[in-house]
Image 1 (cartoon, rainbow, N blue to C red):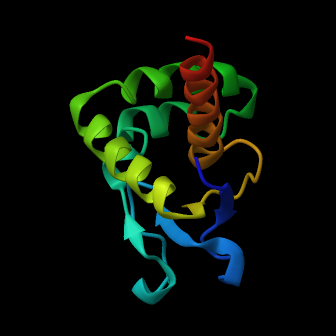
Image 2: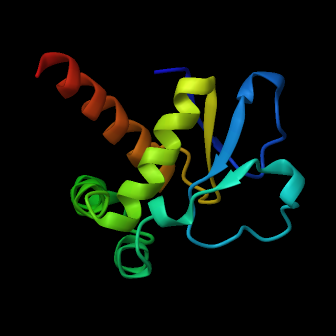
Length: 123
């Protein structure tokens, strides 16, 4: 797997970003399409999950578990296959709009991908 980083969509693009992939369900305000290479909204948490956990950083572990379950659904699996292909091609930056730089869906996705890669190696 290539280099995978997480960045706020409002941060300026950098040469090392590689493929910039938005992983939010909603398009972020004020962001032009030329700052994003690909939008995988199917990989984002559902609206229900997003609303349930918004503003509750104390429920981070619960959010991650619920989001991991959603990543097993067919629409998310198709988007994950696309993401896996992009990771084979080179560096990828997962973009998110949330204000919390440590507890957001892109970081949860990065952790999930790392765990999946770890279990694939050990399994």
